[in-house]
Amino acid sequence: MQESILRKLEALVERHQEVEQLLSLAEVIADQDKFRDLNREYSQLQVTVTTYKQYTTAVSDLEEMEIMLNGDDPDMQEMAKEEIEPTREKVTTLEHELQLLLLPHDKRDDCNCFLEIRAGTGGDEACLFAGDLFKMYTHYVESKGWKLEVVSLSEGEMGGFKELIAKMSGEGAYGYMKFESGGHRVQRVPATETQGRVHTSACTVMVLPEIPPAEAPVINPADLRVDTYRASGAGGQHINKTDSAIRVTHLPTGIVVECQDERSQHQNRARAMEVLYSRLAQLEEDKRNAQETQMRHSILSSGARSDRIRTYNFPQGRITEHRINLTVYRLDEVLSGNLDLILKPVIEEFKAEQLAAMATQGAL
Image (cartoon, rainbow, N blue to C red):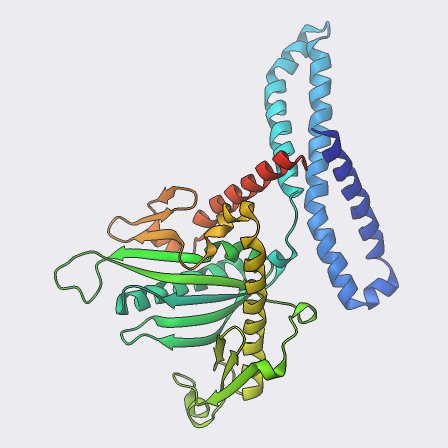
């Protein structure tokens, strides 16, 4: 392993020890925000430090086996011959894991996120597919132990959704879900099709990180138009009698956010502003990324609404992930919530891209 990487790892081991000591101080424990941040840093460092210790142990074992192999004791030589290759493989595997762990950590990956699903080409069938996608994400959230709250929705005439916005809360929610942004296409026989022909419909998905209040962009109140209206849909007597729904329009960008899921105007406005902050932050991020040619060629560049990232073929029970040319015939399993079957290979490929880029730049 390169000397520069070893120095980085030694520095992380020292920082891990330092954070461990800080967490035991009374003044740190009393400051809940600082304690929470340090505890999160400690947990992240723990994985790297543990892997590094395993690596140094494996390297030491390999050195001992090479000495035994070159020694005069036949029994030791035979033992070394049996163990040296598996140990070499272990060293190589751990070295790769450490390189991945040293990749720059995007702090937004730890954030909660907003999930937006919109029906596209296909009319009623696209709305039904949007409903299927939402069910898939709901099952995935349950499997991760996260929390999901609907912010706003517009139902389709035959079921499903024309548009739906939901908030996902959980450790690393955005880090996983950001890879879902893009165009999702479905191929199947619609319920309304009498000739049994396969139709193609599409939905777009956008995932935005929740912006912490301290990092929220400054918005001039004069740039906002806030409208109230009577919420529609389920919700009982209250939702039908009170103008509690909120529509916020950001005039400079034309961004419109609606929220009707909460019981009061105040709550709905607060939630709508959270979504608006996330959209404005993403707008700035897109502008920055557009100036970086490397990002335009990465897996995450496929997050634009016009980019098709995945096809769900019901007749063949097939899902094709176009960004990495992956095809699996386990459609029912994925729709039931095993989204990691697709997401993990995508994330691994993204990390491989990052490693290759950093190696080219000499950062690793």
